[in-house]
Image: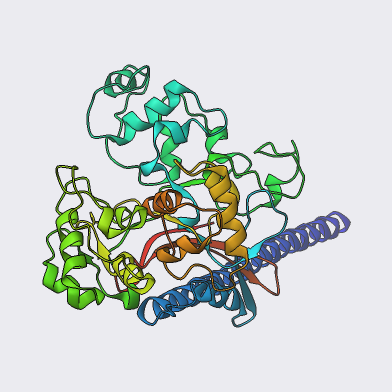
Length: 437
């Protein structure tokens, strides 16, 4: 009996132990499941908060596209800043980006047109970039041009890429994003990204911790974003002018139509129409010199030596309402002269340091920025030739913005980062790309 009782006691203890272990396992599993569920719900809340930040930016951009303030080029950026922070059902969002070489976060989307488009860069301009060499610059231009001819002195075309262990072909067309630069022969990721390892234009914790984690950084609280800090492939040109109305192609427009559109006389209209028919004509030519000095096709005599100069209002209309030729869909965007940092102008082709400094100084004195390209003629110290070069290079209105919206669940601290590229080069406003982290 004693043995039987002992055995029974052991058996009961063993069963109870197994039950306790099973119960503990079930509780642990339930806890893990509950924790996973809570984290999943937290991510959902953070995601929708991040998305709300993107939607707010889209709403502001659409409003400005359809009802712009023609006298205030900076209104949109103030509205972006107003909508850069918000709350949504136990979560919040922040839209912002880091400015190259500056501490902190600037609220609002990143203006893609505040950088030079890589697809418009010349060899001379590329060579101004740090770590750039003749052969790498040639390889970049070989990548974006449409032929298979290697540039001199050195470049890279299909033959070189096909000889690699894992062969591929150059695009032979404009780059679609700045990451594509890393596929070009001789280009290292560190050149392109600098400290911005994920190319999100935001100084993340792992990008400001020295050598603790990748990427290596100088741990100074400022983002060194490499070539991507001054270059982009995201900006897009468009044919929308003031009031979101399509611009008119100047080449081929009748002189009589110019009289009505610009408020000019027949003599002025004839000079503009005649000059615009020349294959090499540019809109900036009407800034470089007065109408009575624009030469005829032979170059020996002016088209009309008695044509009055354009008034400022007439020139503003000409530069704002017309393009020289039909823009190509998705053509690389121009630099926004209201938002580009001073450092970016250092890499701009044909722009002197004196003109760049004068532009920045005058821009800082204008709370509303440059409302039209014609106002570049008002910049002290900038010649008509330099103003014309700025017009060839830039604009005063941007089409594409990168919205980096971070949603945070207030209870758990879970974060979701959503980066969207929004474009108003055509209407309605489009979302070109979306990345979720």
